[in-house]
Length: 468
Image (tube, rainbow, N blue to C red; front, side, top):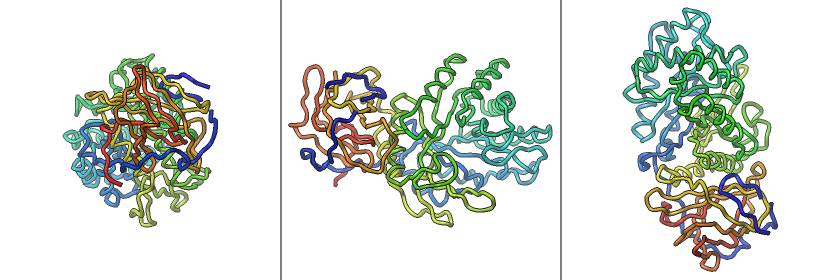
């Protein structure tokens, strides 16, 4: 059975199973060579550096892993309560150290103005789900802190996110958040007129987002919003429906507002709390989930922030309560124990999918399988060389990495020396001449091993490759 489909989020069903070892020999050529952030001119990829304001992770412990990862941006929470422990006295030294070091490594920070500060009555909560500053004294202190923060960092930072997941706080209303957003955005623009301002950091409540936008529109302040960020942790990482709905909703208010994925990532082991909890995770399934989540957004041209670089030592009821979404594992003292497979998998994506690639929006293919596939295609903006990303996307990630041979014909595709790349381990293999054929109307491939983690068919010249 042949199925002809386009290159975006494609649904088709497995015919037979077979391990990669049963396939014709795909000779190993080497591995994807990682590229540090300094080696990449530009990309939209960001890595999470959250919770440093509450000391749930320690930047100094993981900083040597940041630049080599290859993400060009890092999301940081500026932490009012950590900056101002005595009324009117601001200590930015801890944040200076982080911002300056990240920039030295080629990674540009974007700063979030979360959370409140309990040294002021009604100063709001200091963590996730906390309420906004409410009293006149606290609001005035917030305004002064934001002004001082932007004045201090405006020569190094020009992207600012206002609060984190306001829809997660029980006492927070969309109208109250709109008020906080407008006054904060105006304070930022007063200090830095060309600042780029991110709204919401939405936990997922699109009704909250719509009411917020209505309130901002009523105040004739939509021009303050450059980007709307939303978060998401679906069991199936291919599920971008909330993002699609958010895009459609925002388009009704303004064509100028960009949508970004502001926070998403999988656990590496079982944990009882926080997003994607109470599931049998492993470091293998974390890496596969992260890969699929990243490329599902790349296939829709959505800038993406991967949560997060280091495991986080949250505190619950006075005890450490781990959040294992880091690409780096930690010891009890918050030092780094090891880099997880997800770290190296993300390195592979960052090394390949920089801003020199553009998505092929309208392309089609045929396949001999009826299993659900997710497929997207890209080409070099300068050379035109192409690559295709493929995986079985009908189910959440599984522990097994067994593959199935699939035949494809990619319409209008052009390859000269195609290679096969497994993004999970970075291995690059040659495609034997007997397994592919270039024709005038497209390129056909036979027996390509596919599984529930992304593999690439790519022109060899597109890839940075090192030896075995």
